[in-house]
Amino acid sequence: MSNILKIEDEETLIAIVISNSIQPEQTQFYTETNAVLQIGHIIINPKKPIERHFHNPIERQIVGTTEVLILKKGRVQVSLFNKNLVEIKNVILEPGDLIYLIAGGHAFKAIEPSIFIEVKNGPFVESYDKVYF
Image 1 (tube, helix red, strand yellow):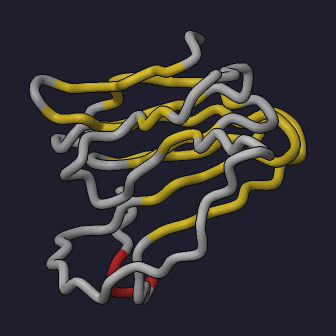
Image 2: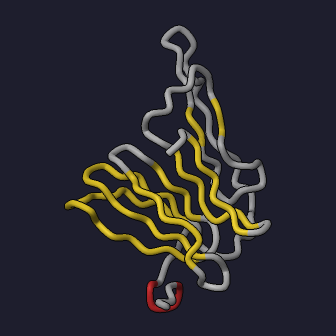
């Protein structure tokens, strides 16, 4: 897998995989500025701290649920599906890899016992939000 893998189907961005092996030398974002979640590496120089700050309470309208998963331990195969529920790609995640799930469907198969950190927009009610196919 390359360091950054953007998985698309036709004109739809399905997912972005960011390999743990990437070591950027400067701050770099991998998502578009209009994405629901902004994902990037922030480089902090000990001689130039990020000054204290807060974020303004800007009202945003979000449709759907996107998720970010960071594999902490193990190996996992992620199957990605387009909007028609057709499988379009399988990727193997290694410890430290991140996947941003944007559109379509997905499934996970542990190759060995695994642990993810998951971040998604909420509130989230599984019985309402999730559809199995």
